[in-house]
Each structure stands twice: as C-alpha cells, then as structure tokens.
Image (cartoon, rainbow, N blue to C red; front, side, top):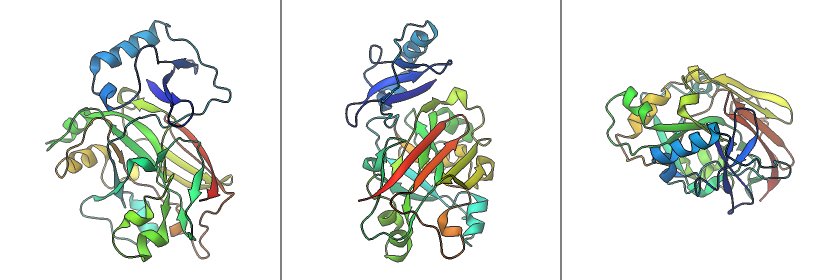
Amino acid sequence: MKLLRVGTAGAERPALLDTEGTLRDLSGVVADIDGALLADGAALGRVRSAAEAGELPALDPAGLRVGPPLARIGKVVCIGLNYHDHAREIGAKAPAEPVIFFKAADTVVGPNDTVLVPRGSVKTDWEVELAVVIGRTARYLESEEEALAHVAGYAVAHDVSEREFQIERGGTWDKGKNCETFNPLGPWLVTADEVPDPQALSLKLWVNGELKQDGTTAEQIFPVAEVVRYVSQFMTLYPGDVINTGTPAGVALGQPEPKPFLRAGDVVELEIEGLGRQRQELKNA
C-alpha cells in the first residue's frame, strides 16, 4: 500500500493512493498514519480490505498539500557515509561500522514544502536517501531476516545538510543536520510488501533541472537489513521511528570548486524508484 497524509500542516488527514493512482480518504477507517497504526496488524488489515473493496471515498488532489506520510515520529536515526561511491567522491575511507547521527523529528516536513536556507549558510547541500520506517519494537535483533521483519515500509527522504555547520564548526555533525525543514519526507509510506528488495532501488536528484545524483541502493556499504540490526544493538527502535540510510555520490560537497551549494530560489527534485517524487523550492530562513 501507498499511505500518505494530506492537508494543511498540523491538520493532515490519512489517505491512500490506490493501484489506479486515485487518492482515497482513510479518515473513516483510521485516525492517522503513525507508529500505533503500523504496529497494529488488524488496523492495517482493515485499511487493506477497505482499499480492495473499493469502499474508500476519492479525494480531489487539486490544490491539496501532501504532508509527511508519518505522524508523531519518535526519532530520526541517520547513517552517514553509507555508499561506496559517496565515500570515494569526498575522499573518505569506508567506515568499518555504520556511522550514526540523529535528526530531530521536527526537521521533518512534507515532500513539496519549502526548504529554508539557514541564516549565515553558504554550504547548504542536498542528499537523496532511502528512509526505513519501523513497524515493530526492535531491540538486540540477531539477524538480518529478523531486522527486515521489523520494517513497516519505506519512503523518500531528503537529508538536507549544511556542510560548514556540520564539518567546520566543531563538535558533532548535528549542527549541520538539524536546521528547520532539513528532512522532507514522502510523498508516500510504501509498505514493505511492495519493496521486495530494498537493495535494488534507483535514487535520483536534480537541482534546477540538472541531474546531480543518479545512484542505486546496491552501492550501500551496510544494507538496510544490517543497518536495522546494527542500530538495534545500541538503542530501542519503536514503531514510527525512521532511519535515513545514507546518500549516493553526487552531492555538492563532492564537486570541484566552486562547489554548487544551494541558494534561495533553487529548486530540488528527487525520487526513488517506486517510492515517489519530491520537489522543493529553497528560500532564506
């Protein structure tokens, strides 16, 4: 299923994109799309049955904002330097273990919402990423098979980053990762049954119509199953938690000087095979 949330920010309602591409209202079946729903097999079954029976009313998408496909996100765990080609382009050695950092849940916005260039920023960068959404409480998972069984679904994430704040301002990466609007998510949460192999997805990103990133999750140093298993050794993952799994080559940081960092007025578009497409215009904070 392709689950999404539509409406004004803070007042989104649950919806579903059916197999014919029609937007359907889920608000008569479930209250919202969140961790509680993803952990409730019976509720998900009701959603699926209603969709298959054609019982869900259609919504007119014209002028309707698409919000983040997941409400009340507990935490956003991010994996750094997780693509061989990205590590090569920035001259970094492939890590021996996954690099973990966090984004606050309040960085998450809709897939087509405005992205704000932080005040004083000269190195705002783009990163298309596969987001993994957790559907069952996960702690100390023992195998990759067990890890995948705890995945509810997948989504497109844009891990916007400010490289000066991240790298040159001391401390951890968090200062360059947690600026307002720095994690567009969606448009859909695609349930795991529709993604039989998360290591066989193409990822693309364009800036002002120019293709910048053109990669595949096959290039991941640590595949999705290993990432989920590994993270569960250090923290408990709860339904509705999100893991951003890294970005392929093609970021501004890896380009020759002068590096083409983002500015107000730029338009970024990104997509992952089968998971939908995003579009953001950048403005100054």
